[in-house]
Length: 252
Image 1 (cartoon, one colour):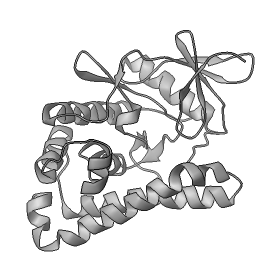
Image 2 (cartoon, helix red, strand yellow; image 1 turned 180 degrees about the horizontal axis):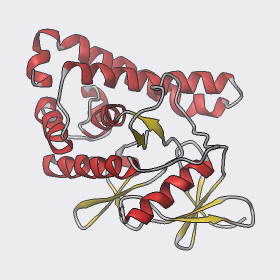
Image 3 (cartoon, rainbow, N blue to C red; image 1 turned 90 degrees about the vertical axis):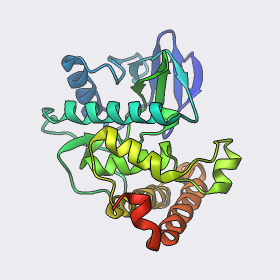
Image 4 (cartoon, one colour; image 1 turned 120 degrees about the vertical axis):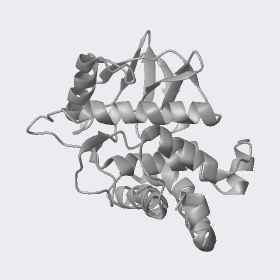
């Protein structure tokens, strides 16, 4: 097998020409059906599917562009609008009858859209100053819009600790205006309950790393548990620190 390894979240990713190759799982047919649905609708914010290669790996379009670690307020609003268009595009999707999804531990039991479930700077390709597409769809699954929005707020605002922002060289910014910018562009109310959901969503990542590791995928613990543990602690601290100020942070 040849190709240039280019990263990957839960499974290694290899670039071959203008395509990405990666190992499949029980969820792959459902994810491919979703991506084909998005392509049929003309939604440009997701890569196209090209089936499987001779090694049984899935073959996905390589999306040309730039991966960024940070975005300004206008770019943040553009991300929110792309997420909204994505969610709207999934409302008419009919999953295959045998669809299986890779569902994070503690996720809601279904919902009105298909969530990407890993909306983050690392999975957003930029071109011409705008977010072009979301990549890495292995965690896609049915869920409520707010579940995806909560994680997007955590990753794009971002709702990291000040220490983590400094370590990642992300400039410090007031969080409240960016929460409002994202929620306003998406069209969802910025409430205290949404911030509580951010903590629940980050904890789902931590719990998944731990439980999946115990189930025989120990490399997931190495990849995710340290990061997710810090994330749970920082988000919990943020929410604890805000109760008299929750209104100013969440807009209530």
